[in-house]
Length: 357
Image (cartoon, rainbow, N blue to C red):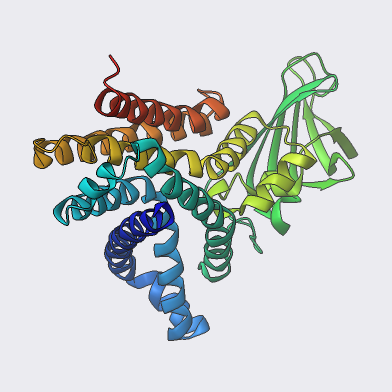
């Protein structure tokens, strides 16, 4: 009996969540297809079929971002369906509590979230990166748009380096200016090129400027750094263009730039926290729809649940931005909103189911 109830609940919720996700995916794919320049470029370079794949994979990435909302809406629709069929009444009559009913959906959603975060996200990110007109972090020619700014602090040095072009995936910078922020014999270094090799920035020929002296020309000047080419390439790309495993490898090798460390950590923890985020959406859906009161009005409860879900989603996105820029600790920014959603859902369910006040 219990196993059959689990199957019914999971089947109802899965079908409604899947339908909601599919609708959102279709709308997002339609919007993505309107980017005619990208579509035409990839179609000319790789063929129409690869352009369609690009649109499909790009839509997958955006659909994953909307999962907190689509899971909430799908949960609400599934529970309303169960109520309309009087199946929730039967479940209550069987003596099962709301906590027992939640066990199977939460377990299934948790596993599915991990598959999405580690599998679907990895595949869509990799394919998008391969098909993008300008592959992120893989600039084969110097890229004048935008400047690359790097800060190095530690090991007795503190400087800021600025380059106006990057090539070879971050190992070579053009039109470079380096400012030492502490006592140094080379307070300002200017060079046409800087090459990253063996933990040093190497300047084949550099102009060294001091406040009270003439310009000096120095050859084969080396300045220590802990930055890696992959880390530097992110200055012209984004952590959104890296897979979970690439992010983990980058952090394992070490990231010296504070801004890159914050954005990389935020992206990695956010993927790991996806099961918690979606569990929060599921609990909110249950809390505002699956109240076991027979005379409760479904409409207002559903509306409150949807509004609260969007509020939590907006808070999550704001926390994401704050964590990626280092304003908030990445762990707190990624997990905090999910825990808030879970606490809200559990609190409302306690009041409805157990009469807790």
